[in-house]
Length: 484
Image: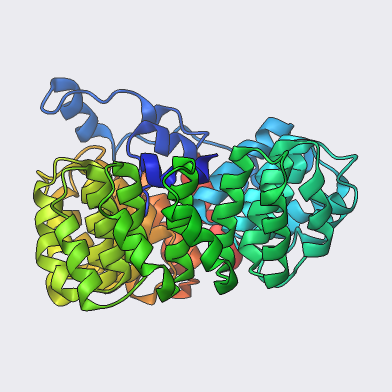
C-alpha cells in the first residue's frame, strides 16, 4: 500500500535526492571496486603521495584486444548473463536513463524471462517511456490465470503508464481475482486510464459486502485519478461522515482535490479544522488543486503549522500553483525548517515557481559548501531539470573550487546530473570533465558527450580510449565513439 501511505508518511520526497558516496559509484560502475575504498585523511602523508603519483603512475598495460566497449560488454550480459546479472544491468540502465538497450530487452521479454527479470524490464521500459513491452504485456493479461501474481502486478503497473494503448476490457475480469494484490493493481490501473465507464465498475465493487476496507481505500484513490465529476457527491459524503473509517475519509479528501470540482470545497475547508493531523494534511494538499488568492493564503498560513506534514504539503502545492508571492517564505523554510522533508518540498517548489529570486537562491544554496549535501544535491537536480543555464553557471563555479580535491562528492553529483541531461549548453562542462584527474569524472563527461551527440569532441574522447588509460574509461570512450 505504498501509494496510499505517501501523504501519511511522506516517504516519497517532492523530487527525490541523489544518494552520495560509494553506493552510488558502485551502482554506476559495478566493476570499479577501488573507488569505494575509504580514502586517506586529508593532508596525510598517504594522501599527499597519492596526489603526487596519481597522474604519473601508469595503469597496468592491457592488450588492445582485451578491451571492448561498454556497450559490447553489456550486450554480452544480455545474451549470456545470469538472471541476477541482467537485473543488475537493468538497475544501472534505469539510473543512467540509458535507452540504448530497449530493443535488446524487448527480445529478452519476448523469448521468456524469470519473474524478477520481467519486473525489472517493465520498470526499465517505464522509466524510458517505451512501449516495446506492450505486446508481451497484453499476452500476460490474456493468460493472467496461468501467470504468477508478481508478473501480472508488474504488467498492470507498466501498462498504467503506457499512453497509447488501453486494455480496460481485459483488466475488468481481474477485479474479481481471488488474489487481493492483483485486484488492487487492477483498480490502480483503471484509475490511471481515466475512463468514465470504469468509475461505475469501481463504485459497484466498493458497495459489495465482501470488499475489504483496504480495497475500498484503493477504489477511493482510483476515483480521484479518474477525475469523474459524477463521483463527487459520493466522495463528499464519505469525507463528511464522521462515523466512517478515518482512512477512507482521508482518501476521499485526497480524491476530491484531484478531481478539482468546486462542489467539494466546503467539505475540504471543514476538514482543515479536524483534530486529526493527517486528515488536515490531506485537506491542505487538496486545497492546493483549487487556484485563487483565498486558497493560496490558507496554504501560506499552513507553512507555519506545527505538524510537519502539513507544512510539507503546503510547500508542494504552492509550487504547483506557481504562487510567486510564496518565494520569500519558501526560502525561509529551506533555510530554517527543522524538518528535512519540508525543506526538500520548498526547494522543489522554488524551482517550479522559477522567479529570478527563487533561482538565484537555489544557485546560492547549491554553491554553499556548508549546506547539507543531500539538500545541495536536490537543488542541483532541480536546477538541472528546470533551469539548466543556471545549473551550468553554478556548476562551473563549484568545479573551480573543487577541481583539485580528492574524491569530491559534489563533483560526482554534478557529473551524474549533467551526463544524463539532453542540453546543448553543457558542452564546455563535458569538455572540462574529460581533463579531470579522476577517471570517474572523465566517464561522466564522456556519457554527456555521447547522450548529446557532440561530435566536435570526438577527438578528445578518442584520446581517452587509448592503451594505458583505465579500462573502465576506455570502455566508455569506445561506446561513445560508436555513436559519434
